[in-house]
Image 1: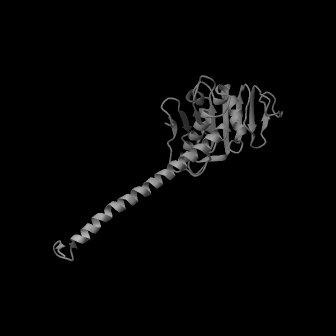
Image 2: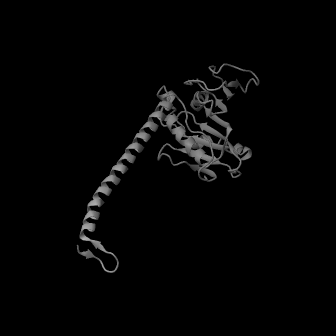
Image 3: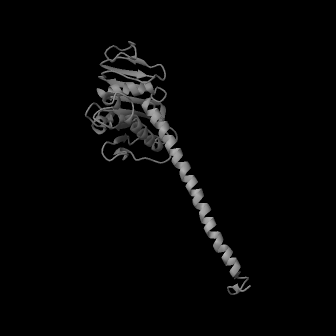
Length: 243
């Protein structure tokens, strides 16, 4: 058998033929493995979306604070999750990753957006070291008001929270849902439904509340009558709840 090549053992034509025949088989096996991985990834993504979709219709938020994976900037800036209706975050200059900060999720009123609503607490955020997260509703108001049920806004709020928790150290014992008007209705509804995430709910002029369930035993105090307790189903001109 004639050998090909210069110095050294070289390769026979049979060796090259065998090698050439082996390459398509190896490529085919690699392609099959890649397709299997892609199918598994798609199935996992679909299952994840199914779980998230089911949780959203039940008003449940899945994101939870933990150790940040990357460092986020300080100051005011958009999250960049959506081109039109997005969310804004404000991180005070004194934020430190080794000191988990309180987080306030701020929910605007009907026809509004997150950024203007955020400015109401921004001076207090600098003083108290709070992180403020202000998402935009997907439609003209929040899903339980416009669509009479949880859905799109829960999904987006979960994305905004996950984005925040990946970049900032948040104190899990001090996470508040705050809102005005329609936003207050949503804060009460989403806060009570997710009492295992929100430690406080702050509602200014809510119209009603429609929690899908109740996590934890929230107590309500009306600012106009400090110390009085009322049923979570009773709307007030302003109220804070502590889960």
